[in-house]
Length: 491
Image (cartoon, rainbow, N blue to C red):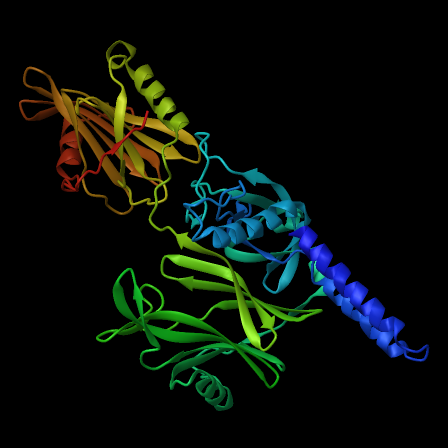
C-alpha cells in the first residue's frame, strides 16, 4: 500500500514537472500552483485520526476489529477477502503509527496522551476477539493502550469514545467548530428538494444536526420502499436514508439502506422506532477539503469512521461497527479460580482437600451489579464456597457442605444477606448470617438454636443474648428464591 501511494505521488510530481517545463519563464503562478498541489497531497497522507474507547483515565484504548495476521486469499474466503483485507490494512496502519498519536480531543480541546503498549491476550493468556466494546473496566479488549501524558489530566472523568490524532495531522488540518442545533429542526427546504430530485423519491423525516457558517451535517430518510431485493432466495423490501453534508451551496449525500416492513415501516438499527439515527460529528478541514469523523451510536452497537468529499459524492469510510455488550459480568480468570480453590482449602484443609470446584454462578446479594458475589461448587452439588471479588482482591465469605446449606434473604436498604445453616448434631441447628454492602462484609452473626431457643449468639465477634439473637433471626428479610444459573469451569 505504501509503495502504491509513493508511486502515485511520484507520477503526479512527474506530470506536474513536465507541465511546468512547457510554461514560459513568466508563468510563475502556474509553478506555484503545481508545487502547492503536490504539497497538499503530501500533507494529506499523514495518519488519520482514530477512535479511543475510554472507561476511565487508566483504561483508554483503540479497540481492534480484526486479526493481527494479514489475511491471505483462499478459495474459501474469496467472496469477502477484499473487505477483510481492507479492514486489516486500516487497523495495521494505526498499529504502525501507534506512538505518533499524542493528542486526544476532550471538550473541544486537545490534551496530551502517550502510547503505553499493545494488549492482545486476556489474563488467561488467550488471544482476545476484537470488534466488541465492553462496559466494565475489568473486561479486557485487544488493542492499543494509551494514558494521559500530563499529571493534571489523570483525574479526568473519561467515559465513551474519543478522537485521537497525531501532531502531524493537526499541523495540516484545522478543527472545525460546529454548533449543535438541537430540537427537531429539519434540513433546509432547498437541500431537501435537491435530494428528492437526485434520488427520485419523496422526503420523509429530516434533521439538521449541527452547522457553522460554511458547513452543516444532518440526516434524511425517504418515504416508502426504496427497492426490493432477493437474498438467499428470499425477497425483502428496503428503505433509504441519507447522511448529508453541505459545504456552502454544495450538497453531499451518502445513501444508507435499511429494511422496510409493510406493517411497521422502515428500520436501520435495532429499536430505532423507524427513524434513522444521526451521528456525533467531529469535523476537520485539510488540504483536500473537509473530513467529518462520526460516531453512530445505536442500541447495542457503535459504528465509527469518517466522511469526506470524493468529487461530487460523499464518501463514507467505516472503521468498524462495534458490538456494544451490556450487563456483562467480569469473567472468572484461571488465577481467580486458583485463588478461590486455595482459600477454600485453607478454610478446612482436612475436609476440603477432597473437593474441587467445577462450576460457578454470580450472585447479586447487595445489588452491586459491577461486583457480584461468586458461588463456587464441586460436582457433588453439596460442597462449595461463597466469595467476594473486588478490584483484583478475593475474599472468602463462607463454605457449604452436606450439613450446612445456603439461603438468600432479600436485600434491604442496599444490604444483601447470605445465611448458612444446618444440623450441628442432635437437636442443634447452627447458623451464620453475613451482611454484605458494596461488596464488603459489614456484619456477621452466628448462633445455635436448640429446641427452638437461641444460644451462643455473636454479632461481629461479640457475644449477644439469646433474646437478641432470636430477634435478629426473626427480623431478617424473607428468603428470595431466584433461579440459579451455573456455568461450567473449563479446565
